[in-house]
Length: 80
Image (cartoon, rainbow, N blue to C red; front, side):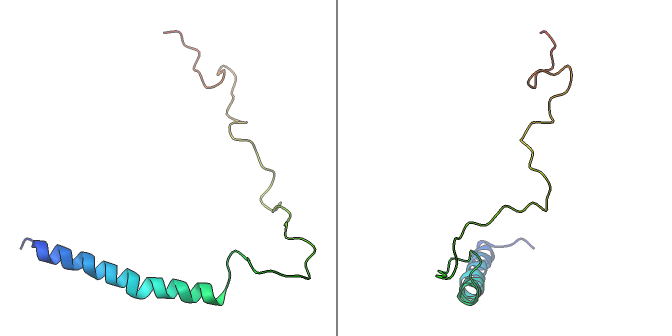
């Protein structure tokens, strides 16, 4: 049986009601309990700069290992 235009509209309204009625208040409650960006002011700290995370290994430049012999700057070297 084909779906009518009204069932598609009701489906969209149901999704909007779910988002604004359930997910938005849950997000407000989560943000009220904890601060994911740690934006609170702490007068006891000397500074807020954190050292970089070195557990992932050394950072590499994008494209640093992409150069292979015979390929100058991404070109194949063929003459057209």
